[in-house]
Image 1 (cartoon, one colour):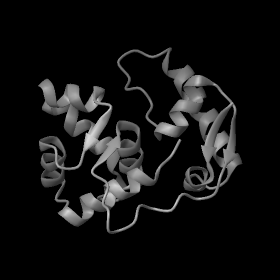
Image 2: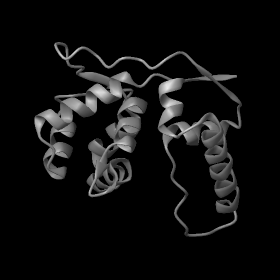
Image 3: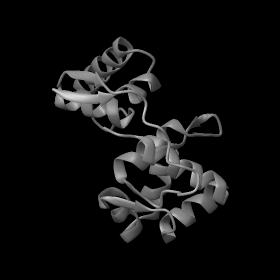
Length: 153
């Protein structure tokens, strides 16, 4: 059984809301298998993981406090940054799909690194380029990394 921290579940509302969202995404994936030339459905990484693995979960622990402001996180996992980007809003939309599209258009090593890197470094050329492209200042990127570092699965 997968364990999901309470603070992650709260992002979706309640435990029941998360279960319903995973079930709906599982159904959307099943329907997508019957289509041709239709983009695959996209969901929050937590929901996608639950739907694809068709595994039950339990809610554990209390909210994890964010890292202390004196020590800013500079390295997070690929999952953490993607989850933080999903939570972040850019032009009234989740930032994750926008960043995913931007990175796919970059192609080459940048796109490969985005898809495959286990860790994302705050001061990497890719992060700096994404921040510049989306108009995010240093404080906003620091906040994004702090949010990412607080996500535990």
